[in-house]
Length: 199
Image (cartoon, rainbow, N blue to C red; front, side, top):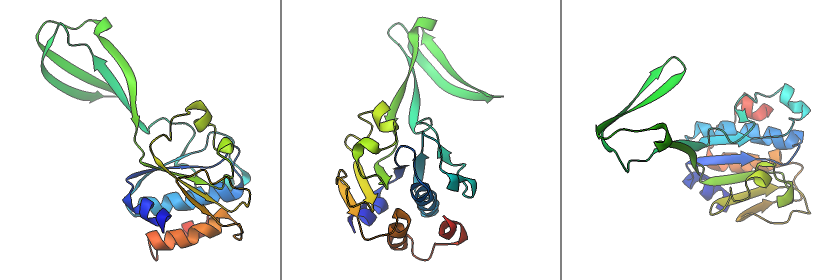
């Protein structure tokens, strides 16, 4: 029930599995992403390591290989010596041009810098990972990525460390995919179609 409520409240959900995910983890990710998108959620699925064999029969084109696209790219201009009049942007070919018209003063190249904003997701769902140390390497590369965000740990391993803010662990289940059927029916009743069922 807690899992379903957190999913319903979230706007942008990040789905991750373990390092070198198995067929069950990837299948569960594909099925859950399909359902969540159908109910209007923004979903980012990330697997940074090699995909398992089941990827050959599943549609995995929406699975990202890194964190690109789930945080804002921020262009920063120092306005200490400039008063800004107008700001607009134009898209030309493969370029976005940000045009800043000064009211007084002028910009130099040294006034411009760039950075990344906060991550966009407000809920993380980890599929089939018994230990936090075995989560996809994005956690190792970005140790604070999940800070302050609810993390749902969905797993069927008896050895699960219960590291989530919500832990849905059922050692009697044959797979994470089996566990997701109940969650999917609670979030979006009657939406399991051919593609979701296949996954």
